Image (cartoon, rainbow, N blue to C red; front, side, top):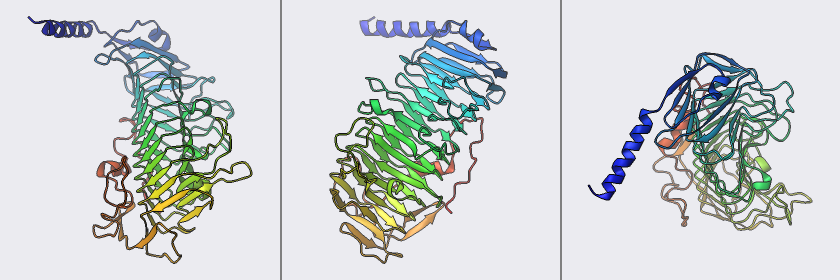
Length: 466
Protein backbone atom coordinates (compact mmCIF):
# COMPACT_ATOMS: atom_id res chain seq x y z
CA UNK A 1 0.00 0.00 0.00
CA UNK A 2 1.67 3.21 -1.15
CA UNK A 3 1.98 6.32 0.99
CA UNK A 4 -0.54 8.44 -0.90
CA UNK A 5 -3.19 5.75 -0.70
CA UNK A 6 -2.58 5.32 3.04
CA UNK A 7 -3.04 9.06 3.52
CA UNK A 8 -6.21 9.07 1.43
CA UNK A 9 -7.61 6.09 3.35
CA UNK A 10 -6.80 7.73 6.67
CA UNK A 11 -8.62 10.92 5.65
CA UNK A 12 -11.66 8.92 4.57
CA UNK A 13 -11.75 7.00 7.83
CA UNK A 14 -11.45 10.19 9.85
CA UNK A 15 -14.29 11.79 7.86
CA UNK A 16 -16.47 8.73 8.29
CA UNK A 17 -15.69 8.65 11.98
CA UNK A 18 -16.71 12.28 12.38
CA UNK A 19 -19.94 11.64 10.52
CA UNK A 20 -20.60 8.56 12.60
CA UNK A 21 -20.29 10.56 15.83
CA UNK A 22 -22.43 13.50 14.69
CA UNK A 23 -25.56 14.09 16.71
CA UNK A 24 -29.05 15.47 16.17
CA UNK A 25 -30.56 17.72 18.81
CA UNK A 26 -33.94 19.36 19.30
CA UNK A 27 -34.07 22.48 21.47
CA UNK A 28 -36.88 24.68 22.73
CA UNK A 29 -35.01 27.72 23.99
CA UNK A 30 -31.81 29.76 23.70
CA UNK A 31 -30.73 28.34 27.07
CA UNK A 32 -30.94 24.78 25.76
CA UNK A 33 -28.93 25.74 22.68
CA UNK A 34 -26.24 27.35 24.85
CA UNK A 35 -25.72 24.08 26.74
CA UNK A 36 -24.74 22.15 23.61
CA UNK A 37 -21.13 21.50 22.68
CA UNK A 38 -21.45 21.15 18.94
CA UNK A 39 -19.08 19.22 16.71
CA UNK A 40 -18.72 18.88 12.91
CA UNK A 41 -21.77 17.30 11.33
CA UNK A 42 -24.12 17.99 14.26
CA UNK A 43 -27.65 19.23 13.54
CA UNK A 44 -29.84 21.28 15.83
CA UNK A 45 -33.59 21.49 15.29
CA UNK A 46 -35.49 24.47 16.69
CA UNK A 47 -38.84 23.12 17.86
CA UNK A 48 -42.06 24.64 16.60
CA UNK A 49 -43.44 27.35 18.83
CA UNK A 50 -43.26 31.02 19.74
CA UNK A 51 -39.64 31.93 20.48
CA UNK A 52 -40.18 35.18 22.36
CA UNK A 53 -37.31 37.21 23.86
CA UNK A 54 -34.75 34.53 22.95
CA UNK A 55 -31.13 35.66 22.40
CA UNK A 56 -29.63 32.69 20.59
CA UNK A 57 -25.90 32.07 20.37
CA UNK A 58 -25.07 29.47 17.72
CA UNK A 59 -21.48 28.50 18.38
CA UNK A 60 -19.21 25.80 17.02
CA UNK A 61 -16.56 24.83 14.51
CA UNK A 62 -17.71 22.71 11.64
CA UNK A 63 -15.76 21.86 8.51
CA UNK A 64 -16.37 22.33 4.81
CA UNK A 65 -17.35 18.66 4.52
CA UNK A 66 -19.28 18.56 7.81
CA UNK A 67 -20.83 21.92 8.66
CA UNK A 68 -22.99 22.36 11.75
CA UNK A 69 -26.66 23.00 10.98
CA UNK A 70 -29.18 25.04 12.95
CA UNK A 71 -32.60 24.66 11.35
CA UNK A 72 -36.19 25.51 12.16
CA UNK A 73 -38.51 22.52 12.41
CA UNK A 74 -40.98 24.49 10.29
CA UNK A 75 -40.12 28.09 9.43
CA UNK A 76 -43.80 29.07 9.45
CA UNK A 77 -44.24 27.66 12.96
CA UNK A 78 -40.99 28.78 14.58
CA UNK A 79 -41.67 32.46 15.22
CA UNK A 80 -39.02 34.73 16.68
CA UNK A 81 -40.71 37.69 18.35
CA UNK A 82 -40.18 40.18 21.16
CA UNK A 83 -36.47 40.97 21.59
CA UNK A 84 -35.18 37.78 19.98
CA UNK A 85 -31.87 37.76 18.07
CA UNK A 86 -29.12 35.38 17.02
CA UNK A 87 -25.32 35.51 17.07
CA UNK A 88 -23.48 33.16 14.72
CA UNK A 89 -20.01 32.49 16.07
CA UNK A 90 -17.49 30.02 14.69
CA UNK A 91 -16.76 28.33 11.38
CA UNK A 92 -18.81 26.42 8.82
CA UNK A 93 -22.12 27.10 10.58
CA UNK A 94 -25.33 26.94 8.56
CA UNK A 95 -28.51 28.69 9.74
CA UNK A 96 -31.70 27.80 7.87
CA UNK A 97 -35.34 28.81 8.15
CA UNK A 98 -35.38 31.53 10.81
CA UNK A 99 -38.42 33.79 10.86
CA UNK A 100 -38.17 37.09 12.76
CA UNK A 101 -41.34 39.15 12.62
CA UNK A 102 -42.96 42.11 14.39
CA UNK A 103 -40.41 42.38 17.18
CA UNK A 104 -37.53 44.67 18.16
CA UNK A 105 -34.20 44.02 19.80
CA UNK A 106 -32.85 46.02 22.72
CA UNK A 107 -30.27 47.57 20.43
CA UNK A 108 -28.25 44.59 19.24
CA UNK A 109 -28.35 43.51 15.61
CA UNK A 110 -31.06 40.97 14.83
CA UNK A 111 -28.64 38.56 13.09
CA UNK A 112 -24.94 38.95 13.80
CA UNK A 113 -22.04 37.07 12.22
CA UNK A 114 -19.36 37.44 14.91
CA UNK A 115 -15.81 38.70 14.53
CA UNK A 116 -13.23 35.98 13.86
CA UNK A 117 -15.98 33.78 12.37
CA UNK A 118 -15.64 32.37 8.88
CA UNK A 119 -17.48 30.40 6.18
CA UNK A 120 -20.89 30.68 7.84
CA UNK A 121 -24.18 30.89 6.00
CA UNK A 122 -27.64 32.36 6.60
CA UNK A 123 -30.20 30.93 4.21
CA UNK A 124 -33.93 30.61 3.69
CA UNK A 125 -34.71 33.08 6.48
CA UNK A 126 -36.59 36.36 6.96
CA UNK A 127 -36.70 39.50 9.07
CA UNK A 128 -39.88 41.57 8.72
CA UNK A 129 -40.99 44.71 10.57
CA UNK A 130 -38.48 44.20 13.38
CA UNK A 131 -38.36 47.78 14.63
CA UNK A 132 -38.14 49.65 17.93
CA UNK A 133 -40.70 52.29 18.82
CA UNK A 134 -37.92 54.88 18.80
CA UNK A 135 -36.84 55.16 15.17
CA UNK A 136 -33.61 56.86 16.25
CA UNK A 137 -32.45 53.66 17.95
CA UNK A 138 -29.90 52.16 15.58
CA UNK A 139 -29.32 48.53 14.66
CA UNK A 140 -29.27 46.38 11.55
CA UNK A 141 -31.21 43.33 10.50
CA UNK A 142 -27.97 41.54 9.48
CA UNK A 143 -24.36 42.42 10.41
CA UNK A 144 -21.49 40.60 8.73
CA UNK A 145 -18.16 40.54 10.54
CA UNK A 146 -15.52 37.89 9.90
CA UNK A 147 -14.87 36.44 6.46
CA UNK A 148 -16.33 34.34 3.65
CA UNK A 149 -19.92 34.34 4.84
CA UNK A 150 -22.95 33.90 2.63
CA UNK A 151 -26.45 35.38 2.98
CA UNK A 152 -28.79 33.85 0.43
CA UNK A 153 -32.45 33.24 -0.34
CA UNK A 154 -33.64 35.45 2.50
CA UNK A 155 -36.38 38.08 2.76
CA UNK A 156 -36.10 41.47 4.46
CA UNK A 157 -38.86 44.03 4.69
CA UNK A 158 -40.14 47.02 6.60
CA UNK A 159 -37.13 48.40 8.43
CA UNK A 160 -38.11 51.82 9.79
CA UNK A 161 -35.40 52.63 12.36
CA UNK A 162 -32.01 54.12 11.58
CA UNK A 163 -29.27 51.80 10.34
CA UNK A 164 -28.80 49.84 7.11
CA UNK A 165 -30.80 46.67 6.58
CA UNK A 166 -27.59 44.69 5.99
CA UNK A 167 -24.01 45.79 6.72
CA UNK A 168 -20.65 44.35 5.75
CA UNK A 169 -18.05 45.43 8.34
CA UNK A 170 -14.43 45.60 7.22
CA UNK A 171 -11.13 44.71 8.85
CA UNK A 172 -7.52 44.79 7.71
CA UNK A 173 -8.11 41.57 5.76
CA UNK A 174 -10.52 41.25 2.85
CA UNK A 175 -13.75 39.46 3.82
CA UNK A 176 -15.01 37.88 0.57
CA UNK A 177 -18.70 37.74 1.55
CA UNK A 178 -21.48 36.72 -0.83
CA UNK A 179 -24.99 38.18 -0.73
CA UNK A 180 -27.22 36.55 -3.32
CA UNK A 181 -30.78 35.61 -4.28
CA UNK A 182 -32.33 37.67 -1.51
CA UNK A 183 -35.49 39.76 -1.70
CA UNK A 184 -35.17 43.18 -0.11
CA UNK A 185 -38.74 44.39 0.15
CA UNK A 186 -40.22 47.81 0.85
CA UNK A 187 -38.42 50.12 3.23
CA UNK A 188 -39.84 53.61 3.88
CA UNK A 189 -37.83 56.82 3.75
CA UNK A 190 -36.22 57.54 7.14
CA UNK A 191 -35.71 61.22 6.20
CA UNK A 192 -31.95 61.20 6.72
CA UNK A 193 -28.73 59.20 6.49
CA UNK A 194 -28.47 55.62 7.67
CA UNK A 195 -31.31 54.14 5.68
CA UNK A 196 -29.33 52.10 3.16
CA UNK A 197 -30.54 48.64 2.25
CA UNK A 198 -26.98 47.32 1.93
CA UNK A 199 -23.80 49.06 3.01
CA UNK A 200 -20.42 47.50 2.28
CA UNK A 201 -17.85 49.06 4.60
CA UNK A 202 -17.59 52.45 6.28
CA UNK A 203 -15.90 55.70 5.36
CA UNK A 204 -12.99 55.07 7.72
CA UNK A 205 -12.30 51.63 6.22
CA UNK A 206 -13.11 52.59 2.64
CA UNK A 207 -9.60 52.20 1.24
CA UNK A 208 -9.46 48.54 2.28
CA UNK A 209 -10.43 45.67 -0.02
CA UNK A 210 -13.64 43.79 0.67
CA UNK A 211 -14.21 41.59 -2.40
CA UNK A 212 -17.89 41.26 -1.46
CA UNK A 213 -20.26 40.01 -4.16
CA UNK A 214 -23.85 41.26 -4.28
CA UNK A 215 -25.50 39.18 -6.98
CA UNK A 216 -29.02 38.26 -8.17
CA UNK A 217 -30.98 40.11 -5.48
CA UNK A 218 -34.22 42.06 -5.81
CA UNK A 219 -34.49 45.54 -4.30
CA UNK A 220 -38.18 46.41 -4.48
CA UNK A 221 -39.37 49.83 -3.29
CA UNK A 222 -36.33 50.29 -1.08
CA UNK A 223 -36.72 53.98 -0.29
CA UNK A 224 -34.82 54.33 2.98
CA UNK A 225 -32.51 57.09 1.74
CA UNK A 226 -30.58 58.33 -1.30
CA UNK A 227 -28.28 55.29 -1.36
CA UNK A 228 -29.99 51.92 -1.87
CA UNK A 229 -26.69 50.04 -2.01
CA UNK A 230 -23.78 52.04 -0.61
CA UNK A 231 -20.31 50.76 -1.45
CA UNK A 232 -17.69 52.10 0.96
CA UNK A 233 -14.74 49.81 0.23
CA UNK A 234 -12.67 48.46 -2.64
CA UNK A 235 -12.93 45.63 -5.17
CA UNK A 236 -16.56 44.67 -4.80
CA UNK A 237 -18.92 43.30 -7.44
CA UNK A 238 -22.56 44.41 -7.72
CA UNK A 239 -24.07 42.30 -10.48
CA UNK A 240 -27.29 40.97 -11.98
CA UNK A 241 -29.63 42.55 -9.42
CA UNK A 242 -33.06 44.08 -10.00
CA UNK A 243 -33.78 47.55 -8.62
CA UNK A 244 -37.55 48.02 -8.90
CA UNK A 245 -39.32 51.29 -8.08
CA UNK A 246 -36.63 52.10 -5.52
CA UNK A 247 -36.11 55.77 -4.77
CA UNK A 248 -32.36 56.33 -4.70
CA UNK A 249 -29.23 55.02 -6.37
CA UNK A 250 -26.66 52.26 -6.35
CA UNK A 251 -23.80 54.41 -5.06
CA UNK A 252 -20.06 53.83 -5.24
CA UNK A 253 -19.64 56.21 -2.31
CA UNK A 254 -16.08 55.46 -1.14
CA UNK A 255 -13.30 53.17 -2.29
CA UNK A 256 -11.91 52.14 -5.65
CA UNK A 257 -11.85 49.32 -8.21
CA UNK A 258 -15.51 48.31 -7.96
CA UNK A 259 -17.48 46.63 -10.75
CA UNK A 260 -21.18 47.19 -11.46
CA UNK A 261 -22.67 45.10 -14.26
CA UNK A 262 -25.72 43.18 -15.44
CA UNK A 263 -28.15 45.06 -13.19
CA UNK A 264 -31.68 46.03 -14.20
CA UNK A 265 -33.26 49.27 -12.96
CA UNK A 266 -36.97 49.88 -13.50
CA UNK A 267 -38.26 53.13 -12.03
CA UNK A 268 -41.73 53.32 -13.61
CA UNK A 269 -41.44 57.13 -13.55
CA UNK A 270 -41.67 57.31 -9.78
CA UNK A 271 -40.20 60.54 -8.43
CA UNK A 272 -36.46 60.47 -7.59
CA UNK A 273 -35.80 56.97 -8.84
CA UNK A 274 -32.14 56.87 -9.84
CA UNK A 275 -29.49 54.68 -11.32
CA UNK A 276 -25.75 54.38 -10.63
CA UNK A 277 -23.69 57.09 -8.91
CA UNK A 278 -19.90 57.04 -9.25
CA UNK A 279 -17.32 58.48 -6.82
CA UNK A 280 -13.68 57.40 -6.54
CA UNK A 281 -11.21 55.73 -8.87
CA UNK A 282 -10.99 52.85 -11.34
CA UNK A 283 -14.64 51.79 -11.37
CA UNK A 284 -16.16 49.78 -14.24
CA UNK A 285 -19.88 50.20 -14.91
CA UNK A 286 -21.10 48.12 -17.81
CA UNK A 287 -23.90 46.05 -19.31
CA UNK A 288 -26.63 47.54 -17.08
CA UNK A 289 -30.21 48.24 -18.18
CA UNK A 290 -31.91 51.39 -16.82
CA UNK A 291 -35.52 52.29 -17.59
CA UNK A 292 -38.13 54.80 -16.46
CA UNK A 293 -35.89 56.68 -14.00
CA UNK A 294 -36.88 60.27 -13.19
CA UNK A 295 -33.81 61.39 -11.25
CA UNK A 296 -31.38 64.03 -12.49
CA UNK A 297 -27.96 65.20 -11.32
CA UNK A 298 -27.01 62.96 -8.40
CA UNK A 299 -29.86 60.60 -9.35
CA UNK A 300 -29.38 60.51 -13.12
CA UNK A 301 -29.30 57.12 -14.81
CA UNK A 302 -25.50 57.38 -14.57
CA UNK A 303 -24.15 60.13 -12.32
CA UNK A 304 -20.41 60.90 -12.12
CA UNK A 305 -19.72 63.30 -9.25
CA UNK A 306 -17.33 66.19 -8.69
CA UNK A 307 -14.89 65.78 -5.79
CA UNK A 308 -13.17 67.78 -3.06
CA UNK A 309 -9.53 68.92 -2.97
CA UNK A 310 -7.46 67.20 -0.27
CA UNK A 311 -10.33 64.96 0.80
CA UNK A 312 -10.50 63.12 4.09
CA UNK A 313 -11.99 59.62 4.21
CA UNK A 314 -15.56 60.84 4.72
CA UNK A 315 -15.36 63.27 1.79
CA UNK A 316 -16.38 62.98 -1.85
CA UNK A 317 -13.20 61.86 -3.61
CA UNK A 318 -12.48 62.91 -7.17
CA UNK A 319 -13.52 60.49 -9.90
CA UNK A 320 -10.60 59.15 -11.91
CA UNK A 321 -10.40 56.45 -14.57
CA UNK A 322 -14.07 55.50 -14.60
CA UNK A 323 -15.36 53.40 -17.48
CA UNK A 324 -19.06 53.38 -18.40
CA UNK A 325 -19.57 50.94 -21.24
CA UNK A 326 -22.39 49.08 -22.99
CA UNK A 327 -25.33 50.18 -20.86
CA UNK A 328 -28.87 50.69 -22.13
CA UNK A 329 -30.81 53.73 -20.92
CA UNK A 330 -34.46 53.91 -21.96
CA UNK A 331 -37.17 56.45 -21.11
CA UNK A 332 -35.16 58.15 -18.36
CA UNK A 333 -35.14 61.85 -17.57
CA UNK A 334 -31.36 62.23 -17.72
CA UNK A 335 -28.95 59.68 -19.15
CA UNK A 336 -25.54 60.95 -18.00
CA UNK A 337 -24.64 63.64 -15.50
CA UNK A 338 -20.87 64.16 -15.48
CA UNK A 339 -19.65 66.53 -12.79
CA UNK A 340 -22.79 66.20 -10.70
CA UNK A 341 -23.02 67.78 -7.26
CA UNK A 342 -20.66 70.66 -7.96
CA UNK A 343 -20.70 73.34 -5.28
CA UNK A 344 -18.35 75.74 -3.51
CA UNK A 345 -16.40 72.84 -2.00
CA UNK A 346 -16.79 70.05 -4.56
CA UNK A 347 -14.83 71.65 -7.38
CA UNK A 348 -12.68 68.84 -8.79
CA UNK A 349 -14.23 67.54 -12.03
CA UNK A 350 -14.04 63.88 -13.06
CA UNK A 351 -10.83 62.88 -14.81
CA UNK A 352 -10.23 60.24 -17.50
CA UNK A 353 -13.83 59.10 -17.77
CA UNK A 354 -14.70 56.89 -20.74
CA UNK A 355 -18.36 56.63 -21.75
CA UNK A 356 -18.64 54.32 -24.73
CA UNK A 357 -20.94 51.96 -26.63
CA UNK A 358 -24.04 52.89 -24.63
CA UNK A 359 -27.53 52.84 -26.12
CA UNK A 360 -29.91 55.65 -25.22
CA UNK A 361 -33.58 56.03 -26.11
CA UNK A 362 -36.30 58.51 -25.12
CA UNK A 363 -34.48 60.76 -22.66
CA UNK A 364 -36.34 63.96 -21.80
CA UNK A 365 -33.56 66.17 -20.38
CA UNK A 366 -31.06 65.53 -23.15
CA UNK A 367 -28.41 62.89 -23.48
CA UNK A 368 -25.74 64.47 -21.27
CA UNK A 369 -25.23 67.14 -18.64
CA UNK A 370 -21.49 67.69 -18.46
CA UNK A 371 -19.25 69.95 -16.39
CA UNK A 372 -17.23 71.62 -19.14
CA UNK A 373 -14.03 71.16 -17.13
CA UNK A 374 -14.47 67.39 -16.87
CA UNK A 375 -12.05 65.13 -18.71
CA UNK A 376 -14.55 62.80 -20.35
CA UNK A 377 -14.46 60.94 -23.64
CA UNK A 378 -17.64 59.84 -25.41
CA UNK A 379 -17.19 57.22 -28.09
CA UNK A 380 -19.44 54.87 -30.06
CA UNK A 381 -22.63 55.73 -28.16
CA UNK A 382 -25.90 55.35 -30.07
CA UNK A 383 -29.16 57.21 -29.63
CA UNK A 384 -32.41 55.84 -30.99
CA UNK A 385 -33.50 58.34 -33.64
CA UNK A 386 -37.16 57.94 -32.67
CA UNK A 387 -38.11 61.28 -31.12
CA UNK A 388 -34.59 62.80 -31.15
CA UNK A 389 -34.71 66.42 -32.27
CA UNK A 390 -31.62 67.93 -30.64
CA UNK A 391 -28.09 67.99 -32.02
CA UNK A 392 -26.07 65.25 -30.37
CA UNK A 393 -22.65 65.85 -28.83
CA UNK A 394 -19.51 64.28 -30.23
CA UNK A 395 -19.37 60.56 -29.51
CA UNK A 396 -23.13 60.01 -30.01
CA UNK A 397 -24.79 58.85 -33.19
CA UNK A 398 -28.43 58.66 -34.23
CA UNK A 399 -29.51 55.19 -35.29
CA UNK A 400 -32.64 53.19 -35.84
CA UNK A 401 -32.34 50.97 -32.78
CA UNK A 402 -35.52 49.04 -33.65
CA UNK A 403 -36.34 48.55 -29.98
CA UNK A 404 -39.09 46.08 -29.24
CA UNK A 405 -40.68 45.46 -25.88
CA UNK A 406 -40.17 41.95 -24.54
CA UNK A 407 -42.21 41.46 -21.40
CA UNK A 408 -40.99 44.44 -19.34
CA UNK A 409 -37.90 45.75 -21.07
CA UNK A 410 -36.96 47.03 -24.51
CA UNK A 411 -34.44 45.16 -26.61
CA UNK A 412 -33.15 45.74 -30.15
CA UNK A 413 -34.31 43.59 -33.00
CA UNK A 414 -31.82 41.36 -34.76
CA UNK A 415 -31.62 43.87 -37.62
CA UNK A 416 -30.94 46.84 -35.33
CA UNK A 417 -28.01 49.15 -36.06
CA UNK A 418 -26.57 48.38 -32.60
CA UNK A 419 -25.87 44.78 -33.58
CA UNK A 420 -22.18 44.21 -34.16
CA UNK A 421 -21.42 47.91 -33.74
CA UNK A 422 -19.37 47.72 -30.53
CA UNK A 423 -16.21 49.84 -30.87
CA UNK A 424 -12.96 49.55 -28.96
CA UNK A 425 -11.40 46.98 -26.69
CA UNK A 426 -12.20 46.64 -23.00
CA UNK A 427 -10.61 43.73 -21.19
CA UNK A 428 -13.54 43.23 -18.78
CA UNK A 429 -16.24 42.97 -21.44
CA UNK A 430 -16.69 40.72 -24.44
CA UNK A 431 -19.61 41.56 -26.68
CA UNK A 432 -20.30 42.78 -30.17
CA UNK A 433 -23.38 44.95 -29.68
CA UNK A 434 -23.83 48.50 -28.40
CA UNK A 435 -25.91 48.67 -25.22
CA UNK A 436 -26.62 46.04 -22.60
CA UNK A 437 -26.56 42.43 -23.76
CA UNK A 438 -28.38 40.62 -20.96
CA UNK A 439 -28.53 36.85 -21.20
CA UNK A 440 -31.46 34.65 -20.20
CA UNK A 441 -30.04 33.96 -16.77
CA UNK A 442 -29.72 37.68 -16.04
CA UNK A 443 -33.22 38.40 -17.34
CA UNK A 444 -34.69 35.58 -15.27
CA UNK A 445 -34.64 37.79 -12.18
CA UNK A 446 -37.69 39.55 -13.62
CA UNK A 447 -39.69 36.37 -12.95
CA UNK A 448 -38.72 36.51 -9.23
CA UNK A 449 -38.08 32.77 -9.25
CA UNK A 450 -35.42 31.31 -6.96
CA UNK A 451 -35.38 34.54 -4.93
CA UNK A 452 -36.03 34.55 -1.20
CA UNK A 453 -37.04 31.70 1.15
CA UNK A 454 -38.72 28.56 -0.18
CA UNK A 455 -41.41 28.76 2.50
CA UNK A 456 -42.42 32.38 1.89
CA UNK A 457 -44.20 33.85 -1.12
CA UNK A 458 -42.01 36.82 -1.98
CA UNK A 459 -43.75 37.67 -5.27
CA UNK A 460 -45.37 40.68 -3.64
CA UNK A 461 -45.03 42.99 -6.63
CA UNK A 462 -46.01 42.63 -10.23
CA UNK A 463 -42.94 43.41 -12.29
CA UNK A 464 -44.17 45.72 -15.00
CA UNK A 465 -43.21 48.91 -16.79
CA UNK A 466 -45.69 51.74 -16.53
